[in-house]
Amino acid sequence: MGGLPHCTSTRPPLGCCRRSWGLSTSTLATWYAALWCLRRGHQQTGAANNTPRHPIAVQIKTEGFHGSYDPAFDTYSLDDDSIEKVREVAVQVRPTACHTTHTPQPPPTHHRQLLDFLEPIIAEGGTLVDFHTVDFFPERFFDLVLVLRADNTTLYDRLVGRYVVCGTAQPPARHPLHAHTHPPRTLAAAATRQRRWRRT
Amino acid sequence: MTAEIMQVVLEDARESYKEEIVHEVESNTLDDLAAAEARLEAWLAAWKADHGVAEEA
Image (tube, rainbow over all chains, first blue to last red):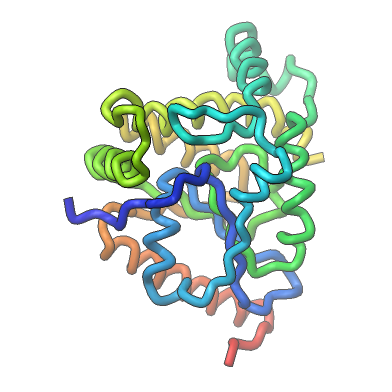
């Protein structure tokens, strides 16, 4: 398909770039959901060419913000324990009842570490944050939130291309959509769990 | 499947942030990407004007 350039990076799908927009009075941030490959496509078009990169993906690895590494996906998980806890909660409590029956909990350790890391960067403004879900970022972080949507066929071809280009040993037909399907569902439950804490 | 993948994220975003700052952007082709970029640039210019921030040289 005439899609976007495929990613050649093997970094996990989290990144942050800062633009010299000179915004000091407030945070200007854009959050791109899913389709992190588009970030690389974005770089190849005009507006983002001069964007200094802030490699949060590297920081996640070097600072140990991740809970585990999945060699099949060549991806770091931010916090596996939290997902397991969320599954337990999801079974026990219906979503509509979460707000009234579940005690607000602080975000998992790795989420907190990442947010602590991002806090001063975001505070300076002119920052673009790129991640596949939006749940655990504080509301005050962003002035603009963009959710990118692609047709399933386009998405699938793009993901297959990514795995082929990256040389991942795992055959792409087994799982490329899996990774982009399940994390939002589990993290969505995490959002319900963490939302009250975040807004305090 | 598309709804499975994206609608959850979109709804989450709408639940998590003020409705007026959350925007869905089509992203299938390079033309979509260029349009999204133009939209972002326009929004940025408007934001700067609203907040009294000078344009870069």
